[in-house]
Length: 83
Image (tube, rainbow, N blue to C red):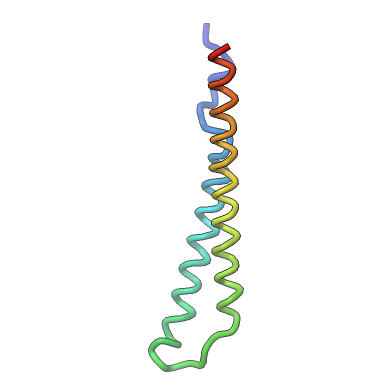
């Protein structure tokens, strides 16, 4: 008989890590697309680029929260096994 607690083997923070990575990637691509014309000299400096950089930061923070959540769950599990 299978243990029903082991059906979902994903770590607790996996969804947060994936979501953060997607948000970071979207922000990075949007920043590159925005900055490229400026670097080529065809447009003035885009002030909304700071918002895109903040989007990358939010993605980084969300992914970091997922990593911390996974580490905390691993520690709880290790503590439970050692007792």
